[in-house]
Image (cartoon, rainbow, N blue to C red; front, side, top):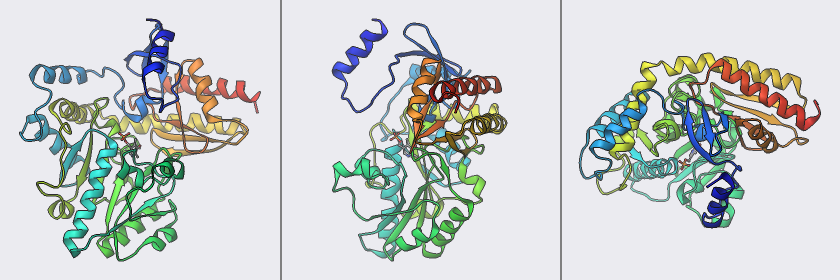
Length: 403
Ligand SMILES: *Cc1c(COP(=O)(O)O)cnc(C)c1O
């Protein structure tokens, strides 16, 4: 089948919940993908911040193939070696205590919410505990995760959602304090807001939230599903703030392509929350997924991916600063590490830049209100970055007549 036939067949049978780019991806190699007609694209979206190690990183496929040769699923009623290994690696890397593996980011959020409610219920024997979440946040599409996603457009058709959620303004500590009550059991935020438009937390904001949580025994849940796993220039973004969450959620790059997520608890939360019978999943953390996770942590360490991120990020930041200086339609450049955004003024639509980039051989996506989002594979080189910046320069020039 050619590209158009594949697209037509998919359009005839797949539920229309996505407006997809007109591209059929057939394979990937390094930081590039190929379409069904053999054209190559430089990938600056990495399956939405999933492919941290790019495609076919040496050792990754071999680990998965070896696991397929043994067993891919056991159920969580038995132990398996990838579970033991991946759990220790995740927990130690985050400086936490215990982990529960899921199939997705949304499920990691669901588990975190349940753990927080259970912790508060065990403490004071009451139900009705509230969660403070942030406007412009994104935590996933399941009903619980949607309930804490501060986006009216996503929520409205699906009400009533999970109750007991209050929304504060990100980076506005006063608005968080206004939401506090004796019923607050958790404050949930992304350390760097991703879908909302690439907004890092202000250090003073996050530190003050940590202080409030400590003072009132409220749990701090940091969602690092997008910004974790080395993307911001440290294994976890919170490391750069000198604080730790009580519960951490991760997914996306955790398995570098295999569907897997996790919520990770510190000692106090693990000791007094979910117990046998409270939570479960058939697939979550199966041997195949966790063989990937375990290998990913080894590969990150052996190849010092985090140091590479810092070097590459400085180069990308300089390139994007250059574009921001050149074009008046770029109103801001924000981000940390290899998670960056370029905000555009109303006269140009970031989605059109992404479409134009696709025509010129670059995969890139948008976020929030008119922001072009950069979440490339973490192994990206300076040469790849120069190529992407140059393609974008041409795209913006073409769309704005150089303005
Ligand atoms: C993508 C994302 C999620 C949801 O993950 P899914 O795997 O799509 O369910 C949750 N939180 C953040 C910050 C994300 O970027």
